[in-house]
Amino acid sequence: RLSGEENVAGVVLVHYLHDIKGLEEELTDIQHNFMDIIPSALHLHLTMEDCLLIIAVKGIASRIRELTERLRSIKKIKQLQSILTPIY
Image 1: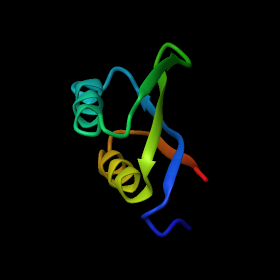
Image 2 (image 1 turned 135 degrees about the vertical axis):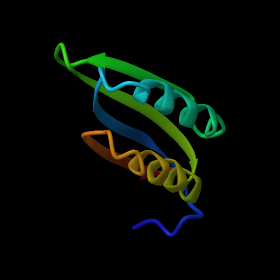
Image 3 (image 1 turned 120 degrees about the horizontal axis):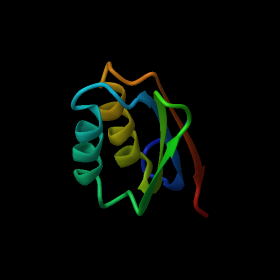
């Protein structure tokens, strides 16, 4: 587990249903609050109902942890997973 002060890069994967009212706007609002660590994001249509948001992240591990905790607090998402690697 990362201590929090390391510089890391990776992705945060968010699987959700696109037809839940207000969810995409909430996800976008959260991303705007973390623009300092989010260089890019990609939206994939998995099925007619399911979407996958791939958020690229780069920065201090503790700040990325703040992002994932904020996203995880949205009970309407189906799944959230992050993959991070230290930058040496």
